[in-house]
Amino acid sequence: MKVLMVCLGNICRSPVAEGVLRKLAKDKGLQLQVDSAGTAGYHIGSHPDKRSIKNAKKNGVDISNLVARKFSVNDFDNFDRIYALDANNLRDINHLARNENDKKTTDLLLNALFPAQNKAVPDPYYGFEKDFEEVFQLIHAACDKITDELIKELK
Ligand code: 4NP
Image (cartoon, rainbow, N blue to C red; front, side, top):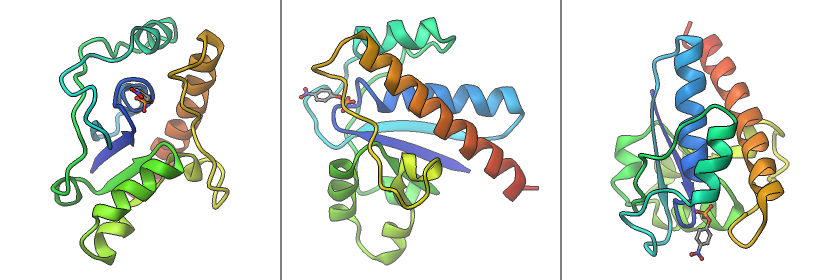
């Protein structure tokens, strides 16, 4: 199973989602390949935002080595599930979808936690440390649920 996390810059939210999902899967013995990407190319090649690295580290997740890349249409071929962190990211990736099958792989990350509520993980880029902590906790709760459900599904 391969899962891709997508936000705007691939430096604040989706690297946290990548690191958290990878760690939870490992801790629970679930075989999962995880990656992340951004819908925008501004930060291609950059490590995550220092504030995301620091907050994730505080919560036991090391994302310091991740490197930003841009979402590409090929990702639809390479991933079973593609989670967008907010509605703009979902709109942008669905815009690149070639068919209904591609669209079926996409959803908002927080719909895993709050079904059909279409909630966003807020963009913390212009925020403060408390915003990064809120982002981490939302992502962690969603990834905890996703991994539990995958374990049941794949049994
Ligand atoms: P992300 O946050 O989408 O969670 O990585 C952002 C990072 C950079 C920018 C916006 C959001 N930016 O405008 O450069």
